[in-house]
Length: 230
Length: 230
DNA sequence: CGCAGGGTTGACTAAGTTCAACAGTGGTGG
DNA sequence: CCACCACTGTTGAACTTAGTCAACCCTGCG
Image (cartoon, rainbow over all chains, first blue to last red; front, side, top):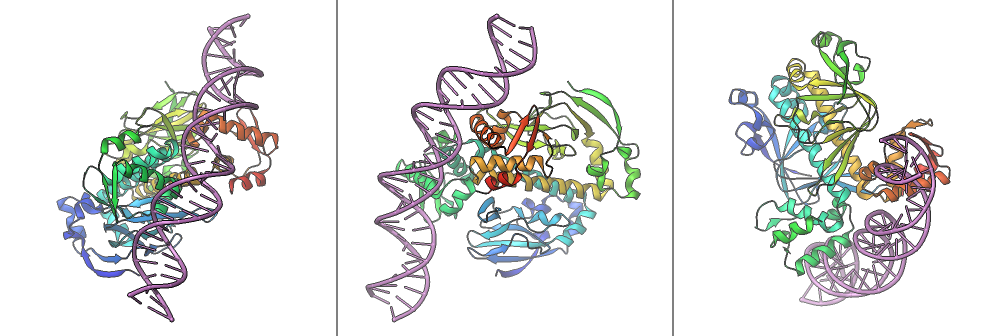
């Protein structure tokens, strides 16, 4: 599962500036001169890794979206994180004993690059900037998760969903890729499929949002923002 | 606010093994030979720092409990984390631009030690182990927050509360310090005061738990565990 | 004593879940 | 090519849960 596209050369990688290696100074670039990673494609529904597995690999998502899920005591899955292009994932492997604490599944056709933990650790010994970058990513992640927590914890279903949609599409008024099923959305937001369906249906009727295939458009941002604040 | 108790010498600190410096090897201990921190006491309700402030300090809690809260767009607070003895907090300061992203408030009389970010950063340049330890703490934090998220996201109120209590007291059958008001508990779990009150009252009537002053005992762990799984 | 704050309890309400039926879509195989 | 099936999403009605509002208790404190 997963098709090897080729070797990526980190030094010349187009997304390097936004990747973990974006932190390197000119003078340090030589460190990754011969750093290569495997660039791999996956199809919708493919599993990149499973909770509990322990490959020594960390990933950077280049294109598409991925969900990270976690299993409860009682066997039902909860989506803990949605990974977007440029994001690092699977970094729990940086903890010595670590096995993956999530299952990573492609929500649409994706492209990612694999990084060997071993190599990365070697790099960390040579550059403080890399360590700093990793710490920053981890702390950013804490903040995002806490944000998610506060939203899920104290917002009612409508504002919660509205908030999520606003987050997702960002600033554009354009149609945006939205490869998330109702089921996944419900799990992610701690609601049921039906509730999601009802709210989106209502908003579509009111012309606040529109949806076609896997594309989402927010037509009336103000209205949605209004709903998000209540 | 906050009473200076004295200078703590990290090298000989009784809680060093469980602190950030627990990671240091014998050979590296000299690094913190003259490392001193201020040990400070706070009273119940005292604020250690406020969201948005930017003192260059990181803390390790030595005794007591602290809550970290965060304000929503609309001004209501959500408790994001409960800090326990031995825990590191305020480490968002490790991000260059960082201001504190929480408000830290003492739930009971506490004792903590202050660590200068500057000094810590200096230390990080000298010891890879410190970096590793920080990364591990940050990732642990991500995991804990995600755990909290899944509990709040997909459990009903009873299992949610039961799960929290089990977490809180840990393995002991003993009475455990429980300095959390109903209000705080409600905020932390994303419920209302009344719901909390009703459930605890019911469980007390059934003899599953008992509470006196600031002490909590789980009398029938199995029953509570049973409730947590549904 | 009177008051404020935290906690408990009850009655009512609103919100969201559950259950169930049904519609649309895509894929498979005869 | 169509019939059938599986899957996802939509909609309605009944039901359950937790939130809301309000009264009340208890404790500590000025």
